[in-house]
Amino acid sequence: MKKYVLSIDQGTTSSRAILFDHSGTIIGVKQQEIATYYPHLGWVEQDPHEILRSVMESIHLLLSDCAVRADEIASIGIANQRETTVIWNKKNGQPIYRAVVWQSKQSNDLCRQWIDQDISEAVKRKTGLIIDSYFSASKISWIIDHVPGARDLADNGELLFGTIDTWLIWNLSGGIHVTDYSNASRSMIFNIHELEWDDELLELFHIPRSLLPEVRPSSEVYGHANIHGCFIPIASAIGDQQAALFGQTCFQEGDVKNTYGTGCFLLMNTGGRVVHSKHGLLSTIAWGIDGKVEYALEGSVFIAGSAIQWLRDGLQVIESAEHSETAARQVESSEGVYVVPAFVGLGAPYWDMQAKGAMFGLTRGTTKEHIVRATLESLAYQTKDIVIAMEEDSNIALNSLKVDGGATRNDLLLQFQSDILDIPVERQVIMETTALGAAYLAGLAVKFWDHREQIAGNRTIDKLYSSLMSEGRRAELYSGWKQSVNSTMGWKVRTTNE
Ligand SMILES: Nc1ncnc2c1ncn2[C@@H]1O[C@H](COP(=O)(O)OP(=O)(O)O)[C@@H](O)[C@H]1O
Ligand SMILES: O=P(O)(O)OC[C@H](O)CO
Image 1: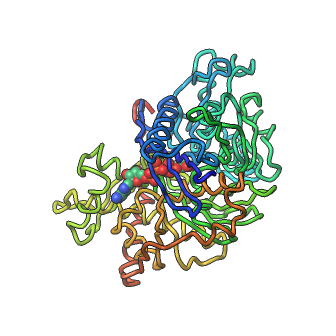
Image 2: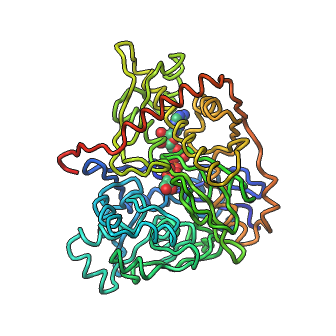
Image 3: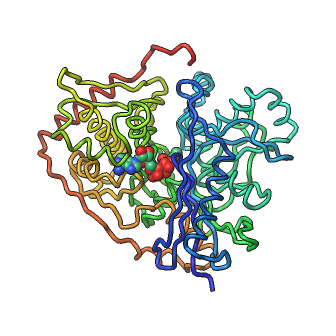
C-alpha cells in the first residue's frame, strides 16, 4: 500500500526532500544548503554535482529518519529553481561548465545585442518574456561560446541542455532528457502558444535544437528513480514558482500567490488565456495537466531573501536569517532609510540590467538595525510595485495576498507587507507550498489523488495579517521607495571586470 508522495524542492538557497501523506500533511523534511559562487561581480554560479548530491542525500536521510521504505512511496515530484542552466556531455554526463544561476549576469552583453536587433516584440509575442539575462537562452549561448570546444560539440549533437528539473530527472532516471511546459516557458526559446521550441528564435540565438529536452506535461510519469532498489515513478516536474501557485490551490482564474524565497515571485492564474502585460510582467505557463496548459501572469523580483543572506554573509550585521526580525524590532521604524537591493539589476516591473543596489536616507544616527529593517521592508516594497502592475494588467483588485517561502517566517515582514499594501496577508499552515505543489502534481499523475477538487480543501490558514497603517503614512513611505528605486536605474558606472 502506497502511503506517501516524495517531493523534491530544489531551490536556489537549498535542496529539500519532503514526504507528504494523503491529507497533504508533512511527514518529514530534510534540507541541505548549497554553495553559491560569485566568480566576478554579477556572476552567480552553482555546482551541478553538488545540487544532485544535496538532493540524493536529503532523500536518503529523510527515508531513514522517518523509517519509511521506498516501496511505500507512490511517486516523486520535482519543483526547481527555474532558468538556471546546465549543459552537459551526452556521453559521459559531465557538465561542461558550472550551473549558471537565474540571477547571473554574464550574458548581459549578449542580451543588449539582441535588444539592438529589434526583436523584443517578437520575443515577447512568442515567449511571453522580456529579453533579459535572467532567462536560459542567453545563458545557453554564453556557455557554448565561452567554454573552449563547446560550439563544435554542440553542433555535433554531443551536448545536452537542461534546467535543474531536467538535470535531476536525467540523473535519477538513467538518461531520460525531458522538461515540463512551465520550465520550458522560462527559456525564451519556447513558443507558449504553439507549445514548441521556436526555430526562428533558436536560429537568432545560435542554439542547436539537438541540445533541447522533450517538453512534457507537469504531471505525468517521465521515468523511474532507483531508490534502495525500488523503482519509483518520477511523476511531476514544475518550476518552483508555478509549483507554489499549485500548492496554494490557486486553481481559479484570478487567484494569486507571492513566494518570498531567494527572490520574490508573484503569480496570478490566468486560466487558458495568455495575458500580455503592459506593465513589465511576464506571461508564462503555469502548468500542463489533463491534456492542456494553463497560463499565469508573473512579477519576478530578483533579490528578496538573498538580501537577508547579504546582511548575514556580506555585511555580517546579523547572525542568521531569523535574527533579521529580532534586529529590526530594536528600532521603531527604518527612520527614512531605504535599501534598494538591485544587486543583479532590477526585474519586474523595471527590467533594468544596469541598475545597482543602493542605500538612501542615511544620517549620523543610522544604525545597523535601521539597515536591517529597511532591507526587510524592501521585499514588501518590491512586492507592492508588482501588485500595482498586476492590478492594472488584469483589471482585478487584489483583496488579499496568499504568501509562502522561507522569508514568510518573518512576522515583522508580513505585517509590514499588509500595512504597505493595505490588504490582508494570509500565511497557510504548510509553508512548504512549493514542495506541496510538486507533490500534488506527482500524486495526481499516479492516482494517489484523483482530481484537483479533492486537494483544494486541504488548505488551512495559519495567520492573517491586517493593515495597521494610516493611508497618509503608507503614501509617504511608498513615495520614498519610488524615489529611491528610480535613483538606482540606468547606473552607468561599470566595475573593471564587468
Ligand atoms: N526569518 C526570516 N526572515 C527573513 N528572511 C528569511 C527568514 N528565514 C529565511 N529567510 C530567507 O529565505 C530564503 C530561503 O527561503 P527558501 O524558500 O528556502 O528559498 P529558495 O526556495 O530560494 O531556496 C533565504 O534567502 C533566507 O535569507
Ligand atoms: O529559489 P527561489 O525559490 O527563490 O526561486 C527561484 C526562481 O525559480 C527563479 O525564477
